[in-house]
View 1 (spheres, rainbow, N blue to C red):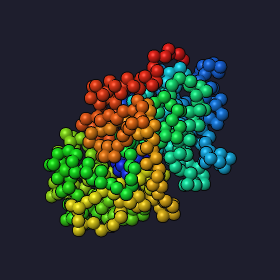
View 2: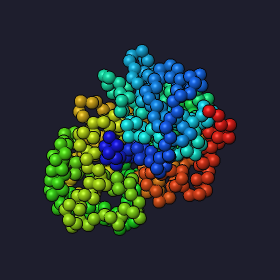
View 3: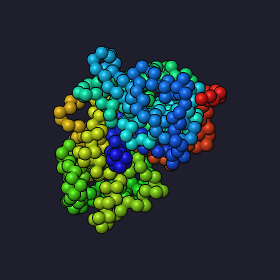
View 4: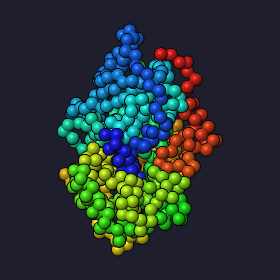
Length: 465
């Protein structure tokens, strides 16, 4: 599954720009480098003092197991009973998967939202804010992802307010144990979810850090992304990407489609959702510049772009590696249907203009979100959802940090502060892609962001177990 998530990252992140894979987003979950040294979790403490017993005593909470943890922590897999519909809590429930890193009940708690499932995430993973404030961390699987999916599945109950209410109930439940300050954070789609939670429950946490979070307030207008991609990087790098796009959909198209179809057949993969290998090729060629800049930096990526005349195997291997072609197979799309449902109902999706590919495109509308969602699932877009979030940030948002990477297309439509914002800041990490972090900011901005985070978390509190 970790391999699957690696394949899905560019695909999901491309979708997020419509608005949300890491990182994360999925990706930002790895910005902290290698996991800390592992220590076997303690399991023999007196029941009266044991944090496991205290967590298990929270109504609706179930301790699934204890995992090995970083030194100084204990790690638990948890499940928390949530209503399918918070407006009508008696009409069904499901268990939401959680991962808890416990350090101390008097240390800050960081609510980490990745926006997807927890399958890929190591139990010992600590988000950047958790490391900065040396706090506890509660990682939350988004509703309708992974094992946190109601059965039967009522898709109408997957929306940003229901998900925010999940987080609200969790915080209220666990504040009986963790009474120090709470901070929320997430990257990409997880960063967006962090902001949405604050919109509906602004006083649940003392502050929030959202990494690489797009703010798509008008799903009908994607010109901001088009402008960004016309300017990012050097003219030579942009031209090299355009040349590959034209080769893939022009003279090399039949060859590349055959290579993709043969590979899929050999793996037992199908493209029923997207439609065919040729449709996948066209879709990924259209998205190539956006996906490239989300992953690459000019210094380590542009020099590797092949010429259109390159050997067929080399050209295909490069293109497949950047776009993660396997991610478009049915086997890998099915687990993330919920993500595309959200994009197609509230968050919005990006369709890039491609005048340089005129006469080469065969499938009008292939960039629409319906391409990824089975026809059996209804999609009705709610155009007021994102403007409402944007207004709240500019008019009422407080204790917010937004961190973007200079080369990341996510910042084509960023969150912005306004006259009503209080203690809210937007920072840009130079020469950085979708994996932006506070640690990658310029020194002065890094110091300011760190100081704000520590102030919200009140990290000068005494430490106790």
